Image 1 (cartoon, rainbow, N blue to C red):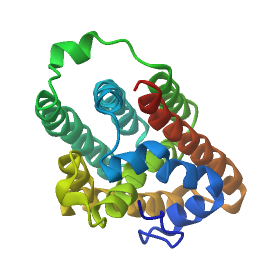
Image 2: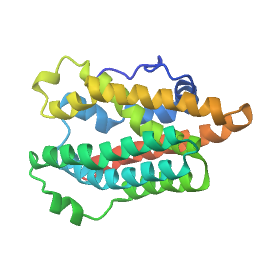
Image 3: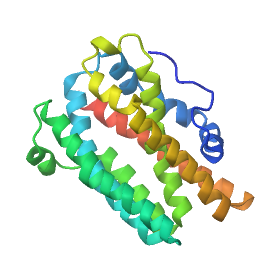
Length: 229
């Protein structure tokens, strides 16, 4: 698999500053062995199925995080933005995920009944706890490694010459496609907007810690899938 680029992928100034500050944590996340095997098509099916189940459970808590973002909002525009994302996840993305999982022999009932793995518990609860104790900027920073990071991973995998024959082609095309790339760009831009309203040099170290920890937990989510093979 091609190496993850060290150059900024999206234009968000704060995101790229945090991405650079995360250093090895970011490289471990976007270049994880799970991602590499996904890109080469060599990832064991058991690992991918386990990941899909946990990703279903993750999306439930991801929806909760965006509901919290609406509560934490200070403007009507922020409330509407969070509500739009929440509806997109709970109504559209979840439906598409269930349909995609069905092609891998997984029913929604199977996924609902599955216990949460430690990797899923750790990341989702960290995001929610960060949002509860912090403000909207803190919450968006905690969400950014997932939202924008998947876009970067999708672009990297989508550029591989072997995508056409990859059994995970549909997943790669979903995150490398124009629709998700627009989501990633929007999330990076939203960080800049929040930073302009609520950021300061005194806050940079704190949001960097949040970003680093969320990135580390995202890498743990990949490892959870790999360990299940």
